[in-house]
View 1 (cartoon, helix red, strand yellow):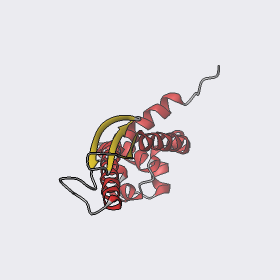
View 2 (tube, one colour; view 1 turned 60 degrees about the vertical axis):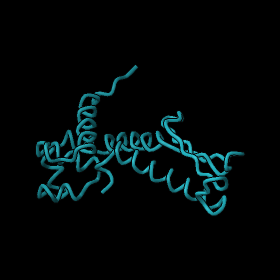
View 3 (cartoon, rainbow, N blue to C red; view 1 turned 180 degrees about the vertical axis):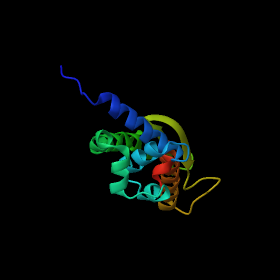
Length: 156
């Protein structure tokens, strides 16, 4: 089994990119900040540090610059997995005001729910469509919040 001769460098660069995605580049060294900006495709971070792409690549050196595409692809794969982590589903309910049940999911496991009744003693919504629309909006808001919490710096 062949080992990637760049594994340690890739791991270090990926850790820098993850930290920057969570916390920003304020506490990073110049080289780390430029690496994170290149991996995460954050031109605004390059400008913040007074660099353009060519100068940033020159500053981090050839070995690191050569690994940027590979590390960026790895980070994007992790990002896609994080985005798939959270989801929600809306299930029609029968009885007890009918309407819909919103199930909030983390790795397909329910971590919360909400009931959006359309009829009953405490009518919250005008009809089934309004109840569904409200459940859908609540699910999207929860999903946006969870994804932003996992990867806050990527929402720029």
